[in-house]
Length: 418
Image 1 (spheres, rainbow, N blue to C red):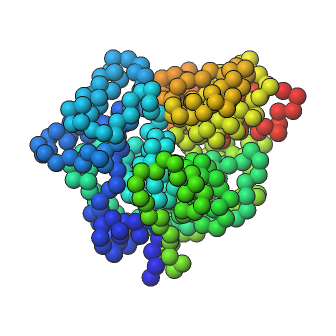
Image 2: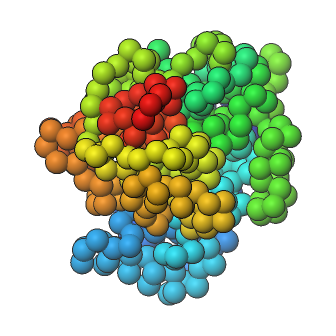
Image 3: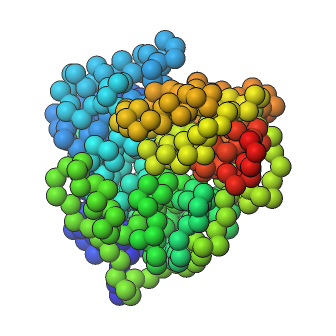
């Protein structure tokens, strides 16, 4: 019997005939930690009292509370910096040269087809968008990976997702993944991998990364796309080292099959307080106080271009705060070079350097009780972006931008006259 992409990667990395349900010990290509999860891993590593360290496989990216918002977050970041200096680690990305960890993992070429990557952050599954098997782990597991370069994995079952057609204007990866999660629920893919088939070549790589990023919101272990010409083009100037793409076998076994017609998909919005609470935007009537564009889900240059096209020549609604947060310093620079920064400034947006702050309810965009935000982020749990009595609505960049102009959740084609 053939194998899924997840089974093939884990077979290769473990040197075994890995099948769904088995537990294997596998070599990881990279292990990533951030400023929140890293310090715990550092302390646990030091307890191991070992001279072993897989320095070249470790990637350390401060992004959650940077620039530091208070003394506690400054101490966290300093602990990472001290650990890097003490062990002379090569893959550290300081503020001003960095960005949101999952964006940096792709931009800096760590993520690549066929690789097995773990990260002490739940949205590590993002890199499946470029044919990697990537998944989140705990900080203590990260410490073990620091020392050994290996971890145990339960080989996941796989859900086959077949897509046909192409996205219409103002529809993208965020709308597809909200639709999938709405259909199967936030526990519909518990410890399973999504694997995408069909007209995948019609889905831009940036959208694939968005889709894979939110696999975890359905309980998924990973969300994996095949490697094609779009993938190779996307990573050709940045990827580190050689890579070996992985395709599923024609006779691979799947635990479930889902099918979606992209031609029929409409702009979606996930209502509070779950990503599975999806609705068509045209069926909603929700006023907002804040619109947030950014995060590891939709903070790429492609998302910024989409939003800038919507707001160009328009003004942010008088009762709305529009926050624009590029996912990396590179994206920030591209926005300047392409004139997007000026468009956002002219419409009345607040633009920040890269940070995870508002997405996780840390700082720079916190919501007060009763406030509502439409956000391009990935979670809208109770209190996710502020007070537990606030509300977060998840949507793609086109809807977020249009809503900032309208003062309520709308699609761009509903902006006539504004």
